[in-house]
Length: 153
Image (cartoon, rainbow, N blue to C red; front, side):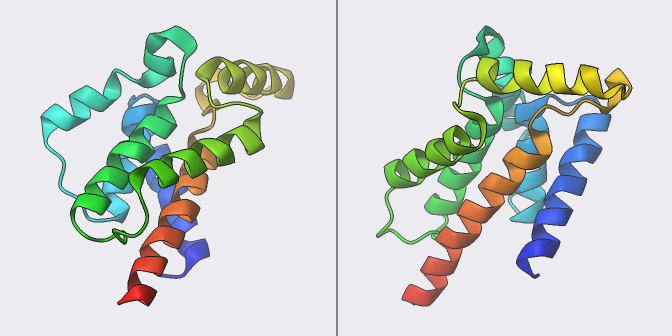
């Protein structure tokens, strides 16, 4: 699947999960699992859901938490090169969020986006925080990492 199609599919899946009532961390986790064909247990879904809203304390964005969980699973399954450390991927993911949003804490992402949404006049039900942009950041990074794995073989 082409990169732009993968991004569009990930945003679509993430939005479908959001509309079903799943929070940021779980929507992104479910969508990424679908994209990368990773079977997740209900326990994993429950565990990742606690990170919504920066673990309800406005700390690190739940989208990053979901991205790191899926990254770890891809790494463990050999789909990301062992030459690339999980720490390097984590640092890069955080850097990209910081570049896009000025930080990676929920409070630095949610509140400015929510304020923008309120000014837009769109219905409350259409607010999706950083679900769409965040999953694209993660997809771009994971595609880069899985591509490097394929090229190394």
